[in-house]
Image (tube, rainbow, N blue to C red):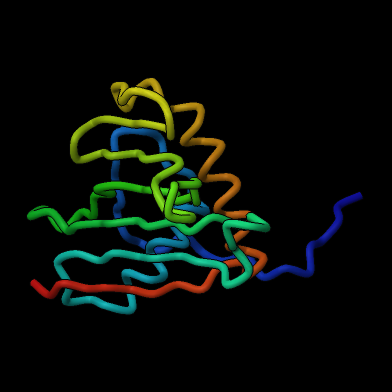
Length: 149
């Protein structure tokens, strides 16, 4: 017996997005839906945040994603950074928790030395799944910064 889902299926937009690690189709769809609203841009920085996230209570961490259009009209993910709060003598400070820096081909986590991005494949896959799940439940508000071509 085949069970039908009540959820609407979204088609993956016809946009090429690349980086040095595998990208899940749902993640491509999330990014492409924002990019397609700005057809004449060179780059876009997406800042995802959740108003309930605080240093005291935690929650869904803020995420910043930067993409740039290459000459062959393909989009490249420059970096994906997830932020967290850390205690300092002056209070709480926001810093990266995880950084996938595809432009420099490095990945790093808080408290660890940078490593080649290839070592971050499994973590990036897990991160994408989690991000897309949170995004599908409207956890984040997104602010975009664009640079026109």
